[in-house]
Length: 156
Image (cartoon, rainbow, N blue to C red; front, side, top):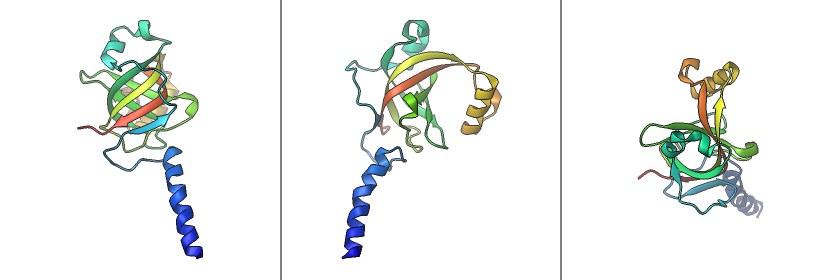
């Protein structure tokens, strides 16, 4: 009887760990993290934002791209890349949720505030360490998206 109760408790607890930001199992399903999307607009591309960053700065919008990299320590940021090579770093509002660490290659849609951020040396060193890169690989100015919500769709 105790074994049966332990198995039931374990089965009930498993969905809670995925919702709390643990890596998602690889599947064909859409994964959503953070707040439900409030905007109903069709997502725009990173290229559209990069063409006029000042027009989007400080505004919340829906943006889609392919996940190029993910923080392997916690999933606390991801690198988003467009088909044309534009890149942006996505962080998560108030450190409130994380991306699955195994989502590289998936299509990400974020509802996020757009920021153009100048990085100091300490932040570039931190980001380089998390990404397994050198400081020279991290740009001094980056397009940053502070996401309220994240939706991941497996790449086709």
